[in-house]
Image 1 (tube, helix red, strand yellow):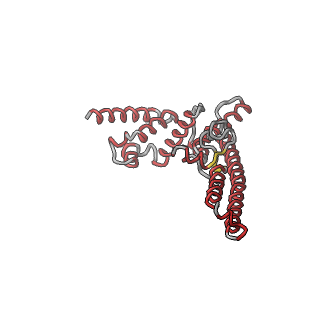
Image 2 (cartoon, rainbow, N blue to C red):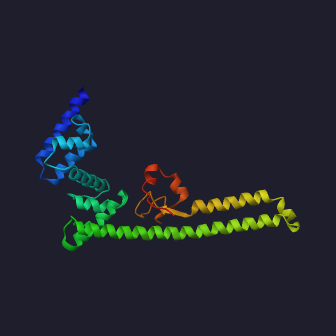
Image 3 (spheres, one colour):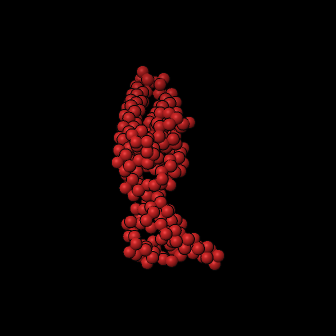
Length: 245
């Protein structure tokens, strides 16, 4: 019962804030975000859609509410990454959400820096953010292309080592390879170890530890990591990787 009372009280509090600040994007977005993300709407309606229809009909549509909440979520992401946006509009959020969350802060800060250099204003425009997102997308594309190019060198070397291993195997079956045939176990083991070392050391993906090609213990400032380091990363870090070689 106490949980029900507390939940209803929280919901009423957030609804009061939302109603009071319908014309204020910041407070309204924060209240709406709390109602949905905290599951407070369930104290009045079985679903989010039903809640909006029953209690916000004529004031805000489902699509508007979801865009506002999405924008507030992006604002929270930026704040957790060290940025200090006063407000994030729905259009700005849509631009930033083209990028993985670990790059949204970089894009926002790039846009804010440009806006400050041009007009001494800290808040970037939607156009500033759009441009910054496009630049980072291009940088990321260039980076993954380089990773794939480097990985191709390792793949070629793996094929070469396999070819050498096959040639050694063939040689061991000839009369003049009689001494070699008795050592093929260690040869095969050595070949397998070389191939495994090449595969696990090859550039595999962008560094999911630092995310922005900063110096870190994992990538050592290279901006990429091997498959071995990727496999050692937590599931949360692995999920940041959208493409790999």
